[in-house]
Length: 129
Image (tube, rainbow, N blue to C red):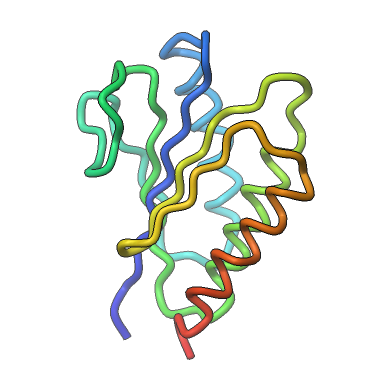
C-alpha cells in the first residue's frame, strides 16, 4: 500500500507567527505519539500546495505520513479533535487535506466538528483495508 499523507494547515486570526508555530508544535508532538510513520513540520515560507493566499508566516503546516495502519487516520482525526477542543474562546482554523479531499473547520461547535471529522474518515475508510 502506498504511504498516504494528510496535510494539516492551521491558522489563527490575530495570532502572530510565533504563536501559530507554538500551536503547531504542540499538535505535532501529540500526533507523533500515534501510530503514524512521521509528522513533518513545514516551514512558513514553504507552505504546501493548497495554502491560501494569506501571510504564510501565520500558517502552521504539518504533513502526517499515515503509513499502512488502517486506524491511523481515525487516530489522527481524534487527536486533532481533542487538541482543538481544549481551546477556550477563539479556536484555530484547520484545513485538512488527503488526496483531493479537503475539510476546513473554523467556527463550528464540537458536535459539528465531530460530524465533519467522522464523514471525512468514512470517505477514506478504505485506507489500509
